[in-house]
Length: 352
Ligand code: NCD
Image (cartoon, rainbow, N blue to C red; front, side, top):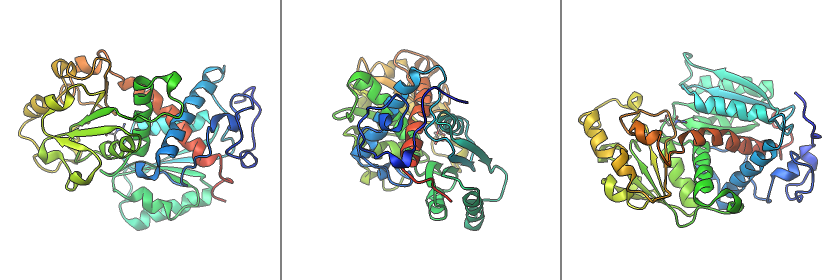
C-alpha cells in the first residue's frame, strides 16, 4: 500500500533533528533525544524521560495518522516484526499486528500453541529460526516469567515483552499511562508531562497479574502514587518492597482516587482456593456502582481485559460513565506503534 508522504531513511536522520519535515517523517515523531534500550522487557527498563518519550511519540503518531486518508505510515517499510505467542491472547496479539502493519512493517504471526516450548532448548531453537529469517523485532508472550529475557540473549533484533507469566507486561502499562494522561492531564497539555501527584488504585488478583507489576513500576516512575487493593491471599510475597501502598479495604482506598484499575481474577492460573466463593470475592473486591461513586468526580475506570463481568466489575460500571476500557484497547495500537517505532527506527536493520 502506498501513501502520499515520502519515505525516510531512518539511519541517516539523527534522533535530535527538529520536527520540520512533513507529517509522517521520522523527525516528526521523535520529540527528544531520549533513547529506549534495545529491548523492552520490563517497565523498569524505562526511566522517566524514555517513558514520556514513548507517550509523546504515541500522541504524535496519532496526530500524523489522523490527517491521512490511508491510516498508515511508511516508517518501518522493509522491517520484519515477528509475533511469537506461546500463550492465548486476543487483544495484545492483534494490537501488535495492527501496530506493525500501520508502520508498514512485514508481520509474521508465530502461534506456538500446542507445541512443547516450555524447555529452554526449544525456545532457543525457535529464537535461532527467527534470527535466521531476519526478524528485526520479536514480540513475545510466554507463560514462563523471564522467557522474553532469555530470548533477548539469543536474537540480535529487539525483543518486546508482550506478557511473561505473572511477571511483566510493559506495553500494557504504557497504554494505561497514555490513557490516564489523556484524561487526567489532557491531550493539549500532555507533551512532556508525567502523571505527577495523581492517585491510582489497582484492585484484585495482583498475585497472578503482570499488568499490576508493570503498572506499579511505570506509574511510580511517572510520579503517581499507587495503592494495591486485594485479599491477602492474592498479593505476592515481597509486595511490601514494591513502590506502592497496600490496602485490604476497597471502599477506603477508592475515596477520591483519580482512577481505579480492575484486574481480572485469573482462574486459569489458580491451582488452589484463593477466596471462599466468587460471590464473596465480588462483595469484598468487586467494583459496583456504589463503589464507583467513591472515586473523584472526573475519575476513570480501567480494566486491561478480558473482563469477568459480574465478578471483578459490574456490567453497569464497565459500560457506564467514566469507563475507558475500549479506549484502552484503541490506545494500545498507538502506543505499540510508538514502541516499535522507537526501538526500530534508530537501529540499522536489526538482525542480518
Ligand atoms: C492481560 C494479560 O494478558 O496479562 N490482558 C491483556 O494483555 N490485555 C490481563 C489478563 O489476562 O487478565
